[in-house]
Image 1 (cartoon, rainbow, N blue to C red):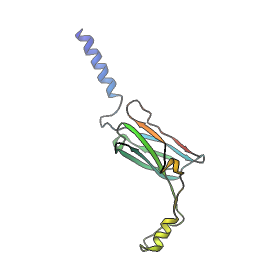
Image 2: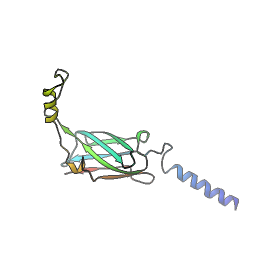
Image 3: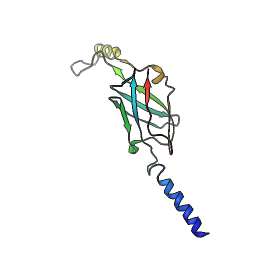
Image 4: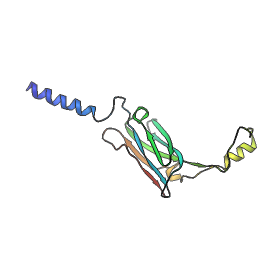
Length: 137
């Protein structure tokens, strides 16, 4: 009986080691496309209702958050942003009306339903997929 209990406890301990990581954070990576093409550059943010937040940049359609900077277990709203710049404010442009006008002319090319009014969700945790791809029409 003792051997049986030891065996079961050993198996449970080993299986727990394979189901996550010691930090309690989970990696996530994937691809983001816009109108069928990889998103050249942007930002992806994961926000939970409990205040946890994580994010990273998107380059050539790909992003990755490693486990060290990963997400605690939970449900997240996913927001994507990519700004199309009509002009860039440089250090040669002093702060003021001209710089503010340039910044206002920049616009986010991601539709609201993937950004400010996002309904995209992602679940992080043991046994959950670590790949999350987004296709924006």
